[in-house]
Length: 75
Image 1 (cartoon, rainbow, N blue to C red):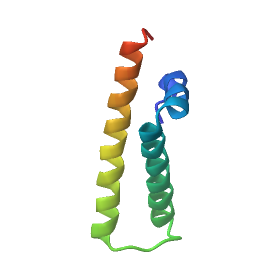
Image 2: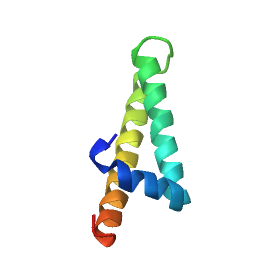
Image 3: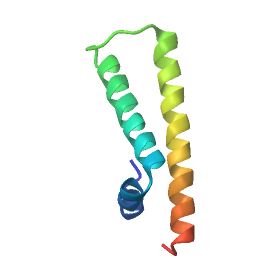
Image 4: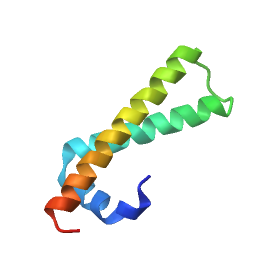
């Protein structure tokens, strides 16, 4: 995710506990969704859609934090 911002993400993961938790939660949701879509997990369609929406919301928050970090650190 956001490979073009890997330096900022690495710095944020080391410096910002909230960012680190968000990043881990996004990864966890991504893994769960992938497993469900691959057929190795089962949930109702509504639950899967809720997971996808949560993942997208977290991704948007991560992106916002990364952009603010880059702006404030002259990247």
